[in-house]
Every structure is written in structure tokens, then in C-alpha cells.
Image 1 (tube, rainbow, N blue to C red):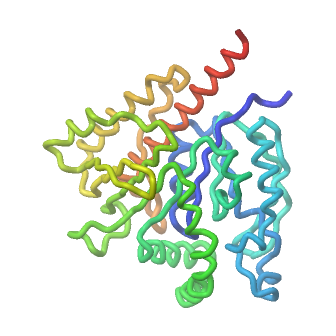
Image 2: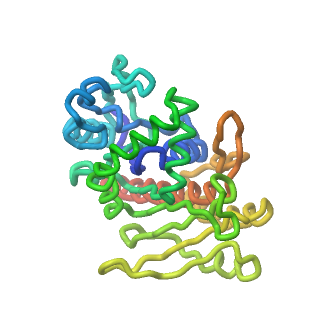
Image 3: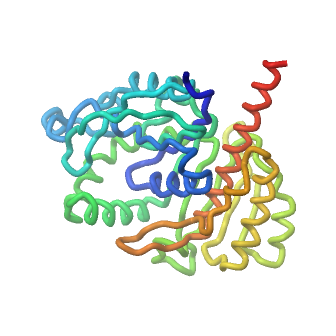
Length: 319
């Protein structure tokens, strides 16, 4: 018998924007036994050799089975298993497909998750990662040289070749996100690439975002967090800015204020508080970014809210 309807989180961004790092942290907070994580980049239509012969990049929707991706997300959302393709980034070819069963929460991360309306309507929460471009380039060089066997020159050449497709197909998806996450360098740390980065969150009114009045009040003497309102087309959006200079004590206090909101959902359970959040790896070393952890926690709030609303809907149908 299929599992009851799941909660879907979509995370989209250009290559090496930090999608997997964000996904892993959110899964850790929710409890990895409750989360299914899939990569929508596995739905490539052609392998690396075929793409080169055809002169098409993996960022082009024509290079991907968008229709099968739509079908699979719909099946997972309704609690049904799928047989998902697997693209091997090391070999540039396809491995045998994987049998995937949905859990309470599904995180779908990749390049084209918000490309079509049929894809977008599957998600309860949509997040787009838009780090400073220079940062993304540094992250991609570091990842592809250490994990995928490329030279820095090959990575830069690939980025240049795919730039047009990034601008045509990836960047426009930002307009469909509920939350846009931008990591950027603080003015006093122009060379920062990791834990000292600031983060700016655009909270669009497509979701009921939490009231952060007490957090703003807490911040009066800390100056590590700010909230403002900006207009984007016909929308007024809240902009949250979290400083990379936030220390351990301040981060714990801020996280506790957000945890109070998460804890109000009876379905959350006390086990949701892992020892550390905002964990990421750089090379072979593990580090903690407090702005990253706070971002993950705010997204978890939205997932728990979506789950609570789903439970209310189920209860109303029963009675």
C-alpha cells in the first residue's frame, strides 16, 4: 500500500551553487530516515560523449527527459515508488537505475527542477540558490578538480561554454522560487569563500513566512541579522541578511528563537535538534557556517508548516 502523500522540497541552482550541501543539512535536521533525496540531473537524455557529438549541454532542457521527471515527482508526491535513472558524473555515462521509495519528506535538487509548470506545482517549498558568481566558480573548480578529475583549465572552459545555457535556462527559474538564497562576501572579507560568508534570503509572499519580530528585537544589540522589505515587480518581499561574523553564542541564541517556531509543530518531535547544523566540507575538512545552518533551519520551518497543513487537510476529510 503506498505511503500517504509526501512533502516535497525543490532546490534549484546552477552547477556547484551549493544544492547538495543545503540538501544534506536539511535532511540531517529532519532525520535522514524520514527523507528521500533525489537529484533531478539524473534525467539526462544523453551521456557525455553524445552531448559532445550533438553540441548540446546538460543545462539545456532538450538534453533532459523533463516529462519523465514530471511523472516521477508526481508519483513520489502521491506516495508511489519509482525506478529512477542514475547519471554517473565521474564516467559521464549512466549506471543502472535505482529503486526509490518515498518517505515523509522528499528533497529534489538539480538544475531544472522549476523549468516547467508541471514540475513547479509538485513542490510545497521551492528554493533557488544564487551565490555570487565568483564564489560559484571557485566552488565548482574546487569540486570538479577534487571529486570529478578535471583540471582547473577544463572547468573554466566548460563554464565559459555553458554560460549562455545558464543564462537561458537556469537563471530564469529564480523567478519561481519561494526563497532565494544568496551567499556573498562581506566587505571586510573580500577573499572569503566559506564560513565567513554572509547570506541574504529573499522571502517571497508565496509562502507564509514566520513572524521574526522577536528576532529583530534580539538583534538590536548584536547587529548580525537584519530584516528589510523590498519590492520586486508587483511583490513586496522580506529580505533577511545574516552576517558571517556571527559567533557561536549568537548563532545558538538565534537558532533557539527559530527552533521555538519549529517546535510548535507537534509532529516535529524532539529528535529534530541535531548536535550541529550548517556543516559543510571543504576538501577533506569539515567546517560549520552559521548562516548556512540558520538558512537550513528556516527552510525546515517551512517544511514542517507544510506538513502540519497537510495533516489538517487529512483530518478535515476524515470528519
